[in-house]
Amino acid sequence: MSLHPVIAEVTERLRERSRDSRSAYLERINNAVIDGPHRERLSCGNLAHGFAACTTHDKQALREGHAPNIAIVTAYNDMLSAHQPYERYPAFIREVARQAGITAQVAGGVPAMCDGVTQGRAGMELSLFSRDLIAMTTAVALSHDMFDGALYLGICDKIVPGLLIGALSFGHLPGIFIPSGPMPSGISNEQKSKVRQAYTEGKASRDELLEAEAASYHSPGTCTFYGTANSNQMLMEIMGLHLPGASFVAPETALRDALTAHAVRRCARLGRAGEHLPIGHIVDERAIVNGVVGLHATGGSTNHLLHLVAIAQAAGIALRWEDFDALSSVVPLLARVYPNGYADVNHFHEAGGMGFLIDQLLSAGLLHGDARTIAGSDLSGYATVPELDAAGQLVWKPVSKESGNRGVLRAIGEPFRADGGLRMLNGNLGRSVIKVSSVPDDRLIIEAPAVVFHDQDDIKRAFDRGELNRDFIAVVRFQGPRAIGMPELHKLTPTLAVLQDRGHRIALVTDGRMSGASGRVPAAIHVTPEADDGGPISKVRDGDVIRLDAGKGTLEVLVDAAEFAARAPAVADLSRHQHGMGRELFGMFRRNAVAADLGAGVL
Image 1 (cartoon, rainbow, N blue to C red):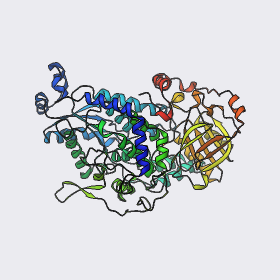
Image 2: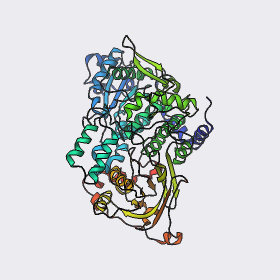
Image 3: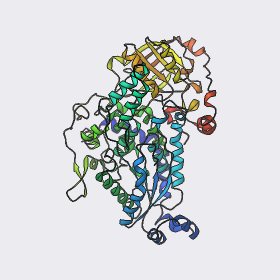
Image 4: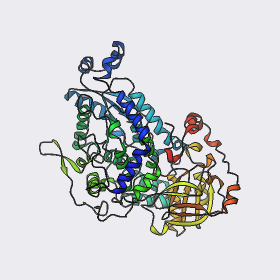
């Protein structure tokens, strides 16, 4: 199938826009490539430090200097359920490496915070900025000139984007991302959501809520709803940085171990002495466009309108929100995974998963099939399913042309909707993003008076006082990167959903973030310029009528233009964010953060 003309047009526009920056990036990483391992040029003292703690076998291999030495950059900790399985990976990887005649070392660990734990807490203000800290930490881990390639162990929200940004700073090295897999399905996400809403209304106790949450998040493995963590896994696969079919294989299974072992051997073969395919060459304009297409086709996390922009920038590629918008118009929604449907990622995987999705998108010319991948094939090699044969050997078989569950995953000819469900909004309040894949059709246009808040907790207090039983648009401002670090406001979802279910016409407008779990309430998020920069959102007053029209792609405050322009921007009291682990520790990030549409980072 020939490439869809819009895919081709967006890619060419991206290439042209990025011509100078991409050329400079490739020149830099190509100049870093030398004949033979870098460690051969280390002094004896440097090298001795590098292998001092290794086994005798590995010391000898590193002394000789010719066999590849693979870095392991790990985000392991045992508080994150998704990352707990990584505890045993370094020892397993080292043993696989020895059997393959190579060596592997843990080069470094990176911070790994759980957004599920920090939702609505002060720690969430550090979440987005942890991405850039992870990128820096990854670069530190790779800085020793000891390695010929790298394996990246990470799953969750800011962690995979941070690892990839850091990996691209050492883009002359080959690299493979290794997932750990989702936890088994617990109670349904819909059931959990109902208990959350009941608790919000005072109809369920804390014990009942905790029981529901614990029945959902109940074991090692990635949370099973389709938020940012699982969107990360989809992206790594469709961008060719996972092995085919690896994203959603369960932890602690023979197939998962076989895929991990194969990734170790593949990483060694991708080096200078083998196929020579550095990660900076894989992540090109085609891979970035493929990632955006995958995001639209699956109804993925809105956080990637920040992360993909930052990832692309790290590879010298100037991705912009208008590229997401153009691609959304032609990429159909092929998957419905909670919060965009009833299913979880295990159901998605069982229905055909990534192999089926990629096969369908390729058949319509919606992906760059010639994009390079770590698997040694182009992207057509990802329209497959991994399994163990009768002898226990890892093999890949062509994926079925039929979905195993049409309620979860559909063919290109019968999509859930014709577009990808992520849209850009523009108007006199600035630029913003809305995810409409789970929003009811009758809620795509909301016109209602504004109720302005400077703290997400104030919405719950107003709800408890009975002040919000009406149509309104909640304007939650001073939540942007320069204000308080652009925290996720997922804590708002149950309260706003209750009001919507009561029949009120509700929407959210904010310069903060929601996540992949933003739900059924229309939410114009990532508003830029942000309030702390004096953006138009800072001039909105209680009672101003706002019109959000997702169909037309507009977000407007219906106030006389001259009057609105003459208003002084509001100033928020952010003093509660100015102490402890808030502003003082991460002041550098807040002072230097760029706008949301440029990735909201400092790198």
